[in-house]
Image 1 (cartoon, rainbow, N blue to C red):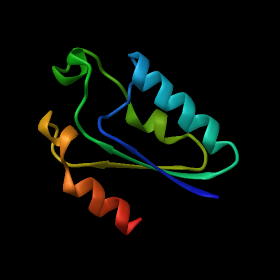
Image 2 (tube, rainbow, N blue to C red; image 1 turned 90 degrees about the horizontal axis):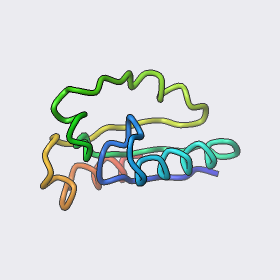
Image 3 (cartoon, rainbow, N blue to C red; image 1 turned 120 degrees about the vertical axis):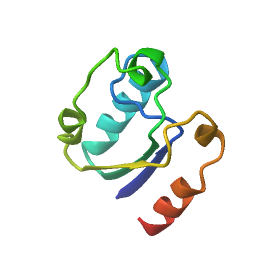
Image 4 (cartoon, helix red, strand yellow; image 1 turned 90 degrees about the vertical axis):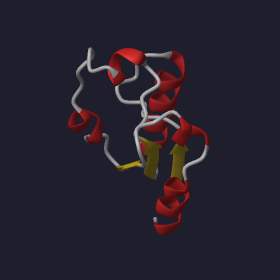
Length: 92
């Protein structure tokens, strides 16, 4: 089965409750399905936005059966309305 997950913010790295839940859910679904994960580039965690916390997105890309797509500008307003996410989802 193919599953499309759309997230209003970047959940990598998973530092808070919502991001941890999303990543756990993503890994669980990827065990038996092909998952397409479209997310906004905006980080909800202030330390990540300011560059105080470093992370390697390639580590998260190694989740089997998951294709990652980051979309849009890295601004808070894009969480509320980002037509690029809808366009990318439609293309997938």
